[in-house]
Length: 415
Ligand code: GLU
Image (cartoon, rainbow, N blue to C red; front, side):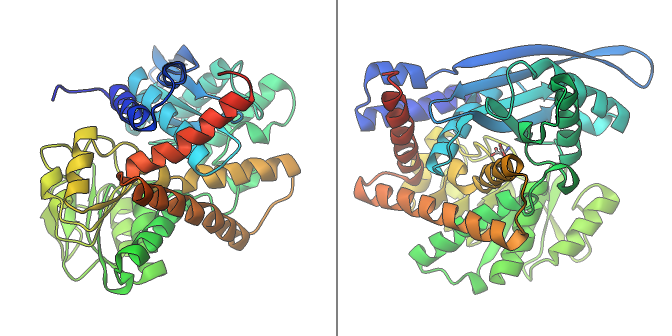
């Protein structure tokens, strides 16, 4: 197969579903491309006194169901096509969770690991300023994503508020608690994924108390997933990788200690009592649950046949290539597709928006409870659709989500 970029992946997934659903060609044409996108240049005076111009994007894919929503990624290899694909997945994610929101995504080509705090603040403020005409609490609401943090969200909120001349806490989610953040937002992506794993394990008859996990990626999603696998289920986390490499221990890791090691040394590598494992080999481990929680395109047609896990829980966006999906399905691997598995983040972001509008805040227990009540039915609607039409879980998730977006487009008189 020729190498497709991520946007072509997402279009290919949509095309496959359009065929199965016998979709109207006009509707298909609307859903294949973003509604609107903004390309910006952000000049930043760097610490050495020289000006560097960064390129950024905000892509709004579809707003039939409400204001658009989606994170902002800071990554050296960011491209507009990646952002387009991710904005499409946000559209399906919000619809699948039955949130009154459309989908969007943002990105800046930069390497935050090589920038000072001051440079990052200027970049965040520059981004917020330049997208201020297209975002807003009832228009488009950004959030954190790969390599962006609550602190960065606070800077962007502050800059937008200054531009607007009023407090606008609701313009962005994933903020620190002191400026309108929600309890439970920090581990929400991982917690949502754990809820889907809990339901999948019930369906497959897996005892999670005896289960083993392998986690690829140890950022926000991956590290919380590893902690929660132990604290929620008593499962063993036997393998962990980050962008530099990985560690294995058949007896399972004390994941809090691994986090401390990473905070000190910059990587999980070299954790006492572990043997090294690569980012490729972790995908082929004989574990019950494999959690790709890093970047896109890691399970491809080349290695899909070697995946031995019973459940692949996609906490990352787009970890599985379209041709790999069918191989996993044929081999009986239960895939919890990304825009279901990682929807906990945007769900609690939506709760954050609601709390910002009301100016009244919930405690963590309320957030956890409400999250469960959103994710559990979403998982079961996908599972039932997959069984009813004998289609894989990803196609089933698309069918449920697309039907909701199309219903909104039709009720609004767009089609
Ligand atoms: N970046 C997260 C995602 O991909 C969260 C988006 C949000 O909270 O709006 O779902």
